[in-house]
Image (cartoon, one colour):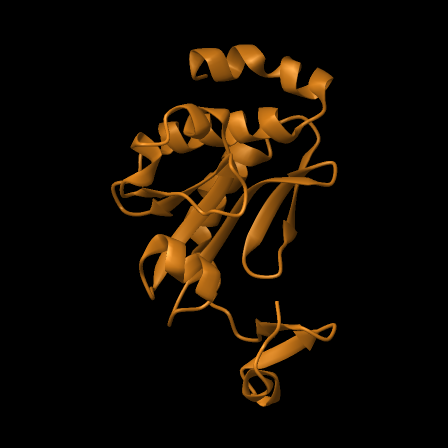
Amino acid sequence: MRVHESAIASDEFRTIGRYVAVKKKARSVPSEILAKLRAICLQLPEAYEERAWVGTRWRIRKQTFAHALIVESGWPPAYAKVVGSAGPVCIVTCRSKIAELNAHSFAKHPFFRPGWWPDIVGLVIETRTDWDEVAYLLAESYRVMAPKKLAESIAHRVATGE
């Protein structure tokens, strides 16, 4: 992504390489939401958490299966566009074969469909968020991204919604 020179020169952004500008003071995902996401993601075999270019992500080996961040003041712009909001709004993205099969359901609020992967789905985290549904989607995302044996190790949990 090429960034306009004025953004690079701004005190609000720092550069990574030649073409990317990352907001220096991006707002963090609220701790109570991070705690819920951690409880879901870190129970999965070999899953780990790390800071992402913005927000926090959970990975299995080197594959990201969940990414939480805040969209605020229209930044990051790609997320603001697909969410349809300049923010502030907390979102989580993950992978889901279910979203591919049932694209219509995953195109309505609180869900959104970023276009950068065919199996990616996003969810706006709100006060009425169904955390059982979030747990199911994140476990499904783990299964999509994990090596086959690890994915199979949680197949029953995903199938039964445990």
